Length: 289
Image 1: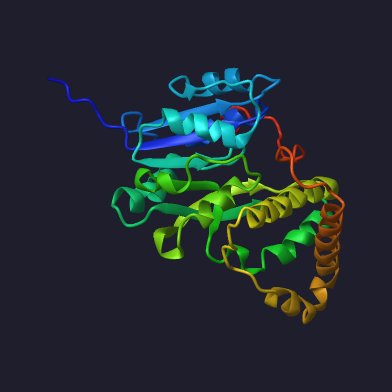
Image 2: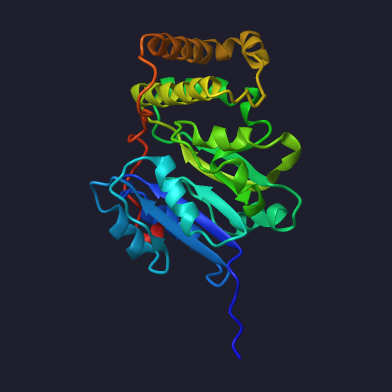
């Protein structure tokens, strides 16, 4: 009698108008992927392009759940309802990570050592303006990334899903999930890295930082406390290095501008989601991957 393999890991990929990049993401993910124990669920939501078709072409064995309702949180809920794995991986549609990294990410969850896990983020600055590079020269020196990056790519054990479900319509979905677990319940898997492409223009970066700040503010109003990792020591340290004065000026100017803009923004209503399209370059040819 043939033994049926058990699905241990479900990878959920919400995708809104990601036809340009979803193929690249799935090509990276498909390297060494064990189809017997890992399922990939792509959730195209409110798309006006060929995201669903591109996903099926890039990975025919993937489950593609289409919905006309836009919104990442709703897409995540649909994916969770279909997922069969004991470890649920959440992956943004424009990130590069391979199957081996996914295996390392979920290992602490499958061993029962943690309820959530995350890795670290590398920022790709190719093609970015000088101002954007200046911002990240300071931002990457801060405390935010020292304990890894819970966002873009993270995983939750099935035993921990009750902490985050039903998932509300929030802008900062990754931060909402992170704050549902104590530090001792989260595993930082240091040898798991993913690549995030930075916005190429200052205007695109402003939009993204505005979304991030708005999301944090929303969570505060919902009663979810800060996740820690604050501190401005890196700003003081930058002052001691003249070569960082120009990047520091960019960083501070953008940060203040975002906060001022949000002061004049009405609260309430449906969550807003500014995203960066400047870094979503078309998928490379197979030979370039």
